[in-house]
Image (tube, helix red, strand yellow):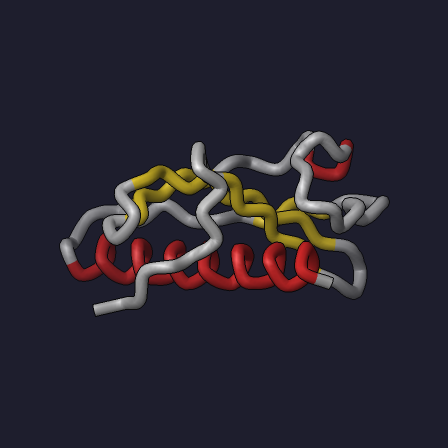
Length: 102
């Protein structure tokens, strides 16, 4: 259960980060990069790993999280009825705490 909650929260945080980055880029007048979901015939296994074949054709979107000062790589795929988002980021200490938005 902890893994599912962690994966969900990670995906949600990544999505918010992508949305924020997009809004900042638009307000600055530059062309914003977009996260693009790629259709997959077989959904990825929800296990927090990026080696599933469903992610193979997903285009990586890289954004920078200014709070934690790390790069976050986000990939998205979809099936006929679901959207899947994978967020990957370095975490050498496997810290499970999050900084709050200020």
